[in-house]
Image (cartoon, rainbow, N blue to C red; front, side, top):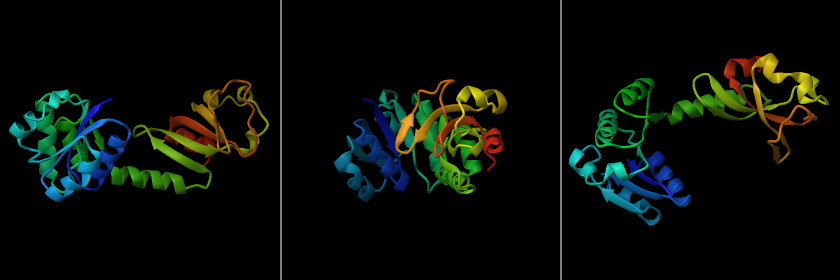
Length: 215
């Protein structure tokens, strides 16, 4: 079981608090708004009304004891930067902060955020990749250059074995799994034969995946 601190109970913060709690972890939430705090109290470990940028208030929460701290405030640029900075100053192990713009993201990283989540940007990118081509399924961005995608098999690969296609050697792409209907096969080897209707779960640079699967 892990312990999490979450500052800010907007839409993202409230949903994140609930998801973390439902997976069996301890979650403490903080927000200035009493109504928001009351709404999440039934499913979090503890909830407090307080000022998330007050160093004395934060210190009293025992920041070092949390496995990760989330800053999900989204209406105040300065407050999210301040809260991120204060958490790191107080010894937070991991600080994950929400960004609202590219500029906000850069400042959060400079202020001590270990990771930044940027929901609007991530959803927009996923949507663009998902619907730019009919042969693209699920998509997960790993960094600015690499992703894991679920793609339809190329027609010319049907009936061939993995070692006949040389996907990794030719395209520098790794096949992680083959999905056949609802079944996911992760035991991929040289003798794996591709069939019509197969979906491949591949890992590689976005540019190389686009070139390989022509989308």
